[in-house]
Image (cartoon, rainbow, N blue to C red; front, side, top):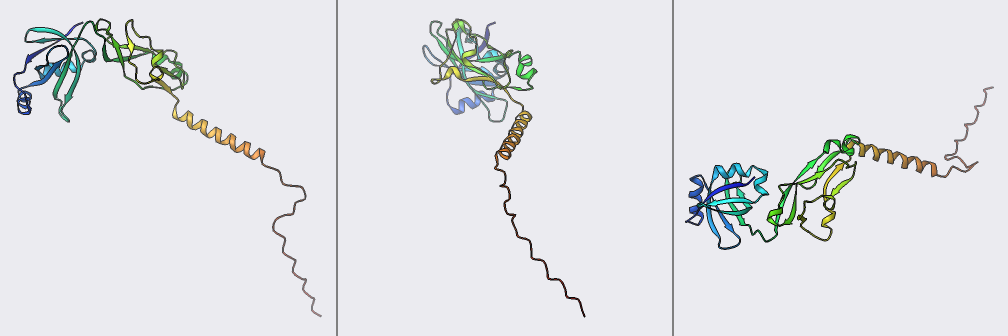
Length: 235
């Protein structure tokens, strides 16, 4: 499904001009990439509701700029510190022949039947919610699935374990990027506390068993006080 958004060329620049646009219900923005940078503005309500869609953040969009359509990616947007208001937005033009670098959302499947959850009583921890990938525009997936069906208690799924679509590669970040944890099944806190207590008891018992026994016939500590002399009988 193609997501389209309408925009108009912005003729004015500067803080004052941007403030007036926002007061009029428009959002200032830019389109960059191949060719010249285009200054644009977009209807706030249309943009605000599109931003609530996951697909809008990880899809090739069709920008209808003054009736001329071009393919773009959402690159950045700025929200007001405390109002539900979009302050600014950036798009990048898409070159169909060049690989692009983009984040795509992760969709986690079968968490309820993972052995670590169903049998072990653990809880899934999502270390990542999206993944940096590189691919040609035609190969861009809407999301990447993460199957948790066989995840045991205390175990993890790593980037290297993911089944990426054809033409899609995980973007490398450091030497051990493939080992980065995507999700894990955390051991319940009560179980950890029980294991720690059991280990402490076992250590105490082992320590007591290995302590040397007292030597036979050893003198007792603290000598007994001498008996008081018997009283003489009165004559």
